[in-house]
Image: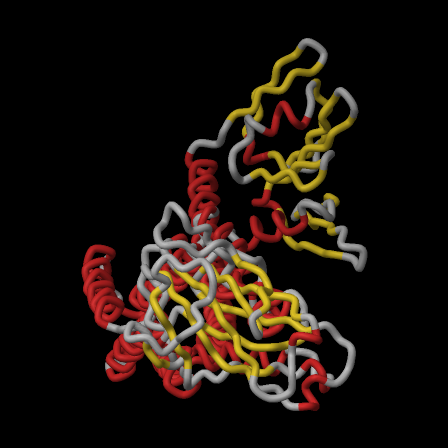
Length: 505
C-alpha cells in the first residue's frame, strides 16, 4: 500500500491547475511530529513531550488512536502569487480537524477518543485557506486526527496533506481514472452479449465465463475508480479495498476456468478440482501478501502465471490455438512487475479490455462454428427425413381424400405434382398432365400431405419429387421448374427455406 501513496500525491500534483498561485505544495513528509491527544481540546503548545514521536507522513497511524500532529509547509513567493483561492487538501483514512499557523480551518468529521464520540470524515477533504494566513517560507500545520471506525488496519492510512488550489478533490482524482473508465463500456457490452448467449445456450459454459469475467473486471474498475466518482466516509475505504481484491481474484479465476474449458479436454468435475486448487493457491497469496495493492497485484500475477503455465503445457502437447493463449497470458502477467503501482490504476483495465476483446473474438468464432455444425446436422436430419418420406411413398403411397361436387376421391399423393389455391377450391395437378378442382383450402390439406410436399408460396404447394430446377431473379423471387413442364412461384420470404429443403434431398 505504501508504494501507491506517493503515486496518488503525484497524480494530485500533476492534475491540479498549473497557474503559479495554484501549484500544490506538499507538507514536509519526512518530519512529522505526533502526540497522543490525552483529552486536550486545543492544539498542544509543545510537540516535544516524552509521548511525542517524530515520524514521516506515510508512517503516521491514527487507526484506533486519537492524535495531535504537527507538520511544516514551505511555499515560495511564486506559489503565493495571484488571487485564486487556496485550500489545504487532506487525504487519508481518518477524521480530522485542521489549523494553519494557529488559525482553525475547519473539521472533516469529528475526531474522538472512541467510536461513539468520533464522527467519520470523508476520505478526501479540502479546507479553504484565506491567503492572509499563508506566509512565504515556513508555515505550521496542526491536525487533530483519529480513525476509530473500519475493520481493516492499513499500513499507510494517511495519503497526503498539501496546499493547493481550492476545489473538489474528488473531481481531481476522477481525472486520474478517466483513461481507465473508457474501458468500462467494453466490460458492460461483454457482460450483456455473452450473458445473452449463455441464456440462449450458445456455448453456455464458455459464454457464461466470459460474461462473468467482464462483470468482475467492470466491478474492479468501478471499485478502483469510486474514489474519483463520489466522496465517501473513510470507513467505506475498507470495503472498497476488499472489493478490489475480491473482483481481481474472481477475474483471475474466470480466466483460468475459461482456459481449462477451451483447451484442457477434461470433464467438468476434473476441471472443477483443478480450479479449486488454483483458488487455494490464490487465497494463500492474498493471505500472505502485505498491503492491498500487493494483494491485488500478486493475485492477478498468480492467476495469469498459472494460466500461462497451463498454456505452455498445452502448447507442448500441440493443442490447437494454445500458443496464442500462452502469449496472451505471459504478456498480461509481465505487465504487473513492469508497471507495478500504475498497473492497478490503469494498465490492468486496458490489458483486461484487450484480452477480453480477443476472447470475445475467439468465442464468436466458436459460436459461428457451433451454429454451422448445428445447421449441418439439421440438413442431414432433413435429408434423412426426406429420404424416409420418399421411401414410404414408393412402398405405400399416402392417400389424400379430396371432395368435389358431393364426390369423394382418394388420390395417391405420389401422383400429385403440385396444388394451387383457387379461392375456396384447390387446383390439383397430376403427373399425367390432368388438372382437377376440389373443395377445400391449401392450409387444410397441407397438414395431411407427406414430408415430400413443400409450401413454396401462399398459393402453391409442390411435390419436391417432381422439382427439376430452381431459378431466382434479381428481386429475390424464385421459380420452381417441375418435371411435367409446369412451374410454381417461390416467395422471397421463404426462398431460404426452399433452398435448404431442396439441398437436403
